[in-house]
Structure formats: structure tokens, C-alpha cells
Amino acid sequence: MKISEEDLKNQIRENSLSGVYYLFGEENFLTEFYINKLFKMAEEKDSVGFNTARFNGRELNSESVADFAEGLPVMGNKKYLFIDDLDSETLPANDMDALKAALSDLPETTAVFVSTVNSPVNVKRSSKAKSFVSFMEKTGSVLEFAKKDKPALIKYISGKVKKAGGTISAVDCNLLCELSGNDLTYINNETDKLIAYRPGAEISHEDVLNLCVPVLDNTVFDLSRAILSRQSDRAFSLLQELLAMKQEPVAILGAVSMTFIDLYRAQAAKKAGKTVEDIVKLYDYRGKEFRIRNAYRDCGRYGEEFIRKSLAALVKADRLLKSSRLSSRTVLEQAFAEILKCPA
Image 1 (cartoon, rainbow, N blue to C red):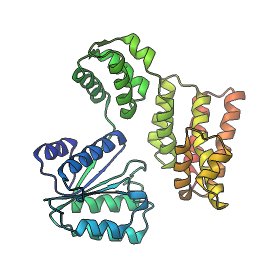
Image 2: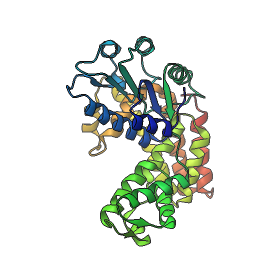
Image 3: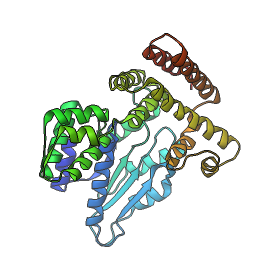
Image 4: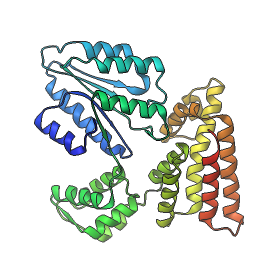
């Protein structure tokens, strides 16, 4: 069944967690926040250290998962199983079948928490995602974290500052939202920065302007992800948001282009039998290794022709931005539309 964030909070508060839970959604910050909160709670309850297990969903061993899930607690009342960042698109069919079998026949003494953070879960476009979410709804509890709207984000910032003993105006909360591109992860980090700068005091308009930098990378990352996952409405909405924030069109195009360059390099390296470490040594990814690791992981989803045509569209857009009388918005929209219509 579907549950809300408030439902989950109540179950945590009442200590009534049981069965299977699946947490995912656009708001990755909340997925990670609650999974980490649940894991910490499980560890506190596990006095002997044998009743809590955490598996990487990207490298899932379904046999190990089943063995842990089916076993009885050791000197305790409950076992807690966590499967982090499961990607229903790439999980092999035999592992998916084994996982579903294990989750369908859980003892009452085992609670399972599955999450997806780094991969889009689009039930409208992906039959695999739709099938897995449907299965989890029938088997347990599903919580999808949608993006928070502006009023909710303002309330979050204000509440966090108030809890730390300080104050911030609604106008400056709104400013922080605009600088962040309404990204809750960024908002949380920047609010922590402001609180540390003005502990227990009023956070001023100048503080927000001077300390909080407009977040291009995070929003462009979301834009690139929307393009790659064929979410055209979201892609053009994010582009409009970036332009409204007065971000330079050339910088937007450059950041999106790097996503496709990373995919190209990763795909070529994998085809040649090279590793992520080989790519990092060859190109300058110091401090940005996560980018090429993600590209190496994901490049198999896209054909060479798709990546080649996408890069060609981006190069053409770069040339037009620097030499054409067309509006920057038109150039970027045309380039992204060309990529979106190209078969992956």
C-alpha cells in the first residue's frame, strides 16, 4: 500500500514498523534521510550486532539477502534488513525473481527497507519500474518522496533555523530557495552553513547573499538526468528555472555536455576493457571521480549512436550560441529536443 511521510513518522514514533518498505522519489534527500534514520534506529535496537544487515542494491546477492531475511533474530525480537539504492532497471531478472520471492515470504520477525536514490523511478515510462513498485505496494508499504513545493521548503528552512535558536525572514527563506533551485539537499547544507555563521542569532539578507552561491551543478545534474530518462516536461522546466536564475547559457550547455562526454569516455573505456581508475588517470577527474564512476555504471543503458548524436547536437548548439542571432533559449531547447527524440 502507499503511505505518506507522516505515516512513516508515526510508525517510527510508535515503534510499529513491520514488513516491507520501499522508499524512493525525486526528493533524494528525504529518501536518504529516512533510510539513515531507520538504520540508526535498527542498530540501537540490535544489542548483539547480528540482527541488522545492509546490502548494496547495485551489487545485490539475492541468496545472501534471502538467508538473512529468513533467519530468526539472535537474542532479540526483530531483524532489520536494508537494501540501498536498488535499480529495478538493471537488476538481473533472476536476482529480481529471487528478491521478490524472499520479500513475499518474510517471517514476522524481519523488517525490510528497500530504497532507490541515484536512479530515476519512472512508472509511466518503464515497465520494470512499474512492475516493481506494483509488487512492493501489494507486498508492503511504498513511500514516494515528491519534490517539495516552495511553501514547504520555506517552512523547512524557518523551522531548522528556529530549532537552532535563530531566526530568518520568509523573504530570505524564499531567496535561499531561489538560489538553490528548490533543491532540498542544497537547502539543508546551506541552512546549516548560515546557522553555523550566525549561531542563535538572526540570519540577515546580506548573510544569504554573501554565503549562499547559486547552485548550477545540482540543477544541471537534474536537467541532464531528466534528458537521459526522457522526462521532457521536467527537462524544459529545469532549463526555464536555470535561465530565470540568470545562469549563463554557455555554462548550462557546458555542464550538460560534460554528462555526455563522461558517458562517451566510460563507454569507450569499457569497450576497450579499461576500468574507472584507468579513465581517472587519463583525464582530470581529481575530486570528481564520482562523475566517471556513475557514467561507467550507467553507460550500458545507452547505445553508441545515441551518445554520438547527442554530442553532435550539443556541439552544434555551442557553435550557434557563439555565432547565431537566435535566442539562447531557442538554441538550448532545440538541442535538448533533438536529444530527447533520439532513440537511446
